[in-house]
Amino acid sequence: MSAEQDISLDEKRVYAGGSARSAFVASEAGLARVSVSDDLVGEFGLTIRDATSDIVADDGRVAVATETDALVATEDGFAETGFGSADAVGFADGLIACGEGRVARYDDGTWIEIGKIDGVRAVASDLLAADGGVYRPDGTHVGLDDARDVAVGSSVFAATGDGLYALANGWMQRLDGAIRAVATNAGRAVAVADGTLYERRDGEWTAVGAPGDVADAVPMPDALYAVTTDGTFLANAGDGWRDRTLGLQGCRRLTVVDGDS
Image: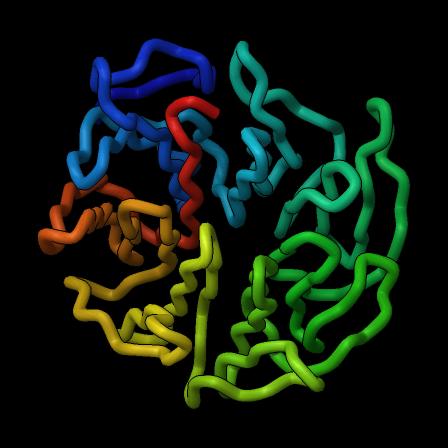
């Protein structure tokens, strides 16, 4: 595996003339960057060597939660922000980071505490998934227990220890069992349970066969990407799964940035 010290989102693409994307995998070993084009998996390497718990991309912005800091992507690589140990990051009126019970927003180079929530695991827009359920950044509890992930798009979903829930007239259960991750994008939605990957099709959640123990998955308009807990990157553009072993253990999160972002 090649080692990279930093990564620019504007660097030369691996696939000339193609729809190349940068996928980022958060793992115990650090943050890996993987170049993908449709279902072709290209070069990959470590960009951060600290244990990484979360990675998020929004409108071309990328942020990472590591055991030492919350980092943001720049043209010159990932820059420190001075937050300290972070468990989760997201974007809601700016960068939000969570760790050690703190929820803070990065404002003009300064972290401003906006709430206190223990055990935050994920951030999506103005919703946070935490040990105690789903919260607003200011600490307002908005329902559920043991939330592992949350996704905000045309619909709002929360992954919890006892099922997948959609926010409608209150929280409505859509899947039974422990759900570890959920993601929405471009009208598509996927959820990851222990050993099973689900995709929402025509309003119904359908199990999708995927090799390995999937840790996280991301739908794109023309492809579905996933990573397994033991470091296999998966890509499916409609003709079945293609895979590439990354050599990373303890993979936790996945995000994908379009090549022209």
